[in-house]
Length: 77
Image 1: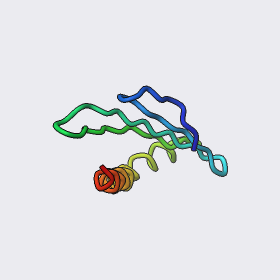
Image 2: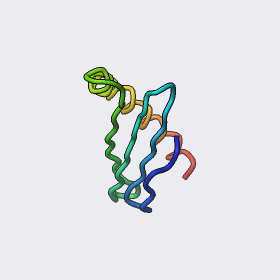
Image 3: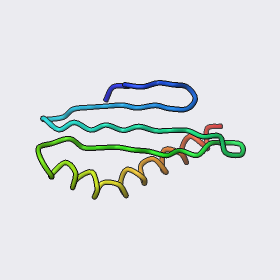
Image 4: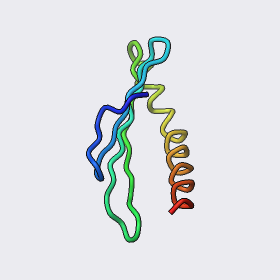
């Protein structure tokens, strides 16, 4: 994965390719109390409808990964 957008402290994005499949992830940060709210957008790019379907079914897994990362980071502060 490589960082494609870095607009501290509001936006960050990365893109990566593995065996002909590209994935893009973008995070947006908004102040919320003592921390922040994070929204995400991502897409998996492969031929035709397979990429759109894979993106759709991957939403829960990506959300879970981001939630787990937030928990780890919150323990560090």
